[in-house]
Length: 267
Ligand code: FES
Image 1 (tube, rainbow, N blue to C red):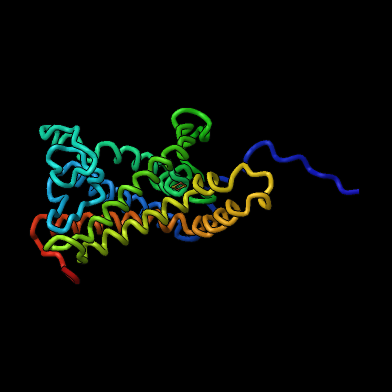
Image 2 (cartoon, protein in one colour; image 1 turned 45 degrees about the horizontal axis):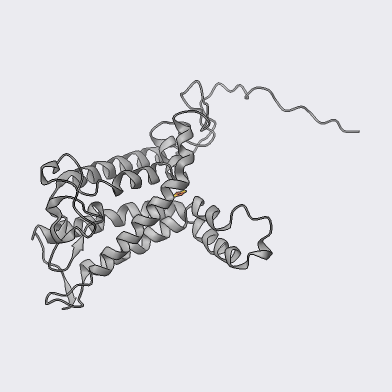
């Protein structure tokens, strides 16, 4: 008769920090550099206060949407409660940016990425971390990560606003309909933002979670299946949208500052 051994009470005592022989440092280092560069760029642009809108074609950078400063001009589709004097101190998109930041900060993908690259907790699989204690996400402050589902709702609403901006970006030189490179860049960015938002683990749970019986909910089951497919690429969408946001913002900045002119395909 075979006997079942009781589980070990302590971790294996290994002197080496890791037995891994591959280049496990690459992922945390690259992630650290990429995220830091992105945060610096986004912060500078969010507080910049100019070159965010091309009135002629109605191109609004996503970093300023929805735009609430008195200086937003025709870009202010939802009111202007921020006085002009707050420029440089408060971002024009003061409502959406904190929610988007919290949405990304609590995202399951980013959690993995910045726990590894910024906190080294742990820096990679099977590599010991420098921290002595670990209380997981059950205590303050990391228990706040559980609010992700609510930030997802806010992000979905902001994606609707971004979609509206992208539709308005099909604005012609002489009024009416027009297409320029900016319209296409802003539209591509919105599509990627939706892929990122809809592939979220919380979205998957909102759509198909807490069901006892899928066969009684065929529509929700179908949607859950589609979102599950997207969910498999969630990490990729998380990274691609960082790039698409910068590309969209940078292009609008170049056109708005008259450094380049928009490439027009129609009107
Ligand atoms: Fe990444 Fe929800 S898990 S956005």
